[in-house]
Length: 323
Image (cartoon, rainbow, N blue to C red; front, side, top):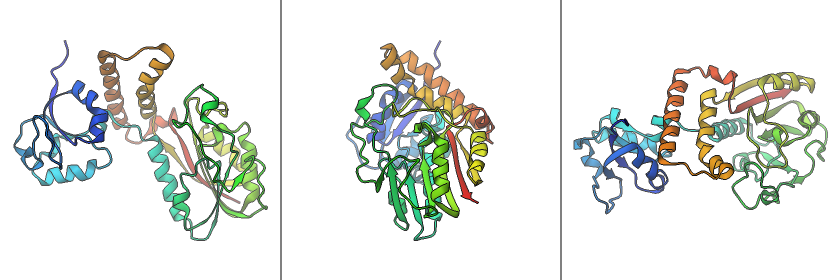
């Protein structure tokens, strides 16, 4: 016998709501809607009236502005204990966000005027954060999303690397010895047949004392095929490999946990089921997945130190210097 649904007033009726609408209706008995903007929908409640309305939850749809909206609602008299979101209930996958935040922070810490090489830069997502640096980008320039249908693809029809500074093999770059202050290499090593040769090349072009900022997955799925040669790298691989080429690791940060990794793959299950088994998830199937995500989120919160990441995580982010 299924449990009675909790009641919820839905706050935020824009794109985030449309993306979550089916899931929201499966999870809650919706008793009203609210938003800063007035909407012509049945059950609309103005934000200043929410504090008077009975419901188990006030559910905020926006992920980007959740904290801001929550603060405004509390100020307006809404019980903080009733305010929730999808992330509060089943967690959220923040693999790319965690990596981007770490990389951007490191880039902003680099003194102005330093020479930075973005190795395997692709479409150069970090270039906007390097305006204070002498930015050089490199890519091998061969990946084309539509050439191979296996595995996950980039989600775009064209992968444009035409604006990179240098198109060449990452293991043989036309740069002088000791000419670079910082090498940035993010999510590239799994796409290299011989990543140790790339480390050797980084060591060659970096100045003594120069910095290597490196991220790669610990356990990834096939993507950007056919240029995919490893699922990932453990922290022990970094510890063993970097010292061979004169690098000293200054910082190595684990990204995610065992539970977060499993949650990420559960989120992918409907796509995998449809693509390979030609099966569309039923409502009951989706409820089962949601229950699994709720359990993983609870276990992840209990794993406060992220210790489960030593078994499985998204990947590692590290800063090292050339001795």
